Image (tube, rainbow, N blue to C red; front, side):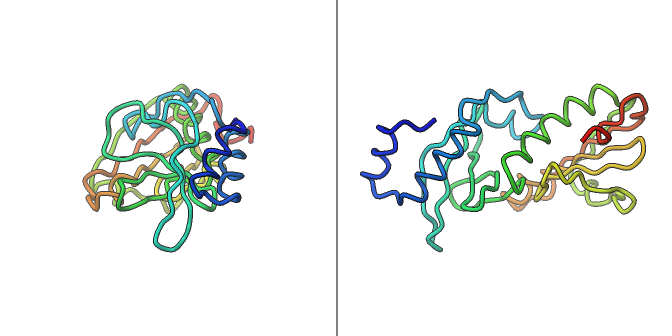
Length: 189
């Protein structure tokens, strides 16, 4: 949790009270949570922690969500609306409409991987050719650039964040989990 000393530090540096309050709320809910490695984004943030609030040209304040596990050309952020995403200092891409969406997506990686009888990875523009028309999105994932889809024995995770950030469709990735029959991962929500 942001301690009073740290709160005062941000206030002394001209960070508005509302932004410091948002950072404190993030810390109270998520601060210190050790996350499992994400399958993409070089593992994602290791531990949630708020830091480095920045204002954009529209006057909106963003802050870091935690340090990356690996050296990557982007960081993880929390938007003014509580969205979770990546940024490279010039551009930002929202991955999930909430921090809880990112956490749900991590949980699904491990759950779907355990119960699927077949796992296939699709890369690049082939991701755009996946037929998602008969699938429903997982609302818990609160997907934006990245989302999860389900139907019957199939679950598909799409990761388009890096492709959007770097304007390169070849960076898209999808994971298709098929043959989920023993424990449907979406029935106990």
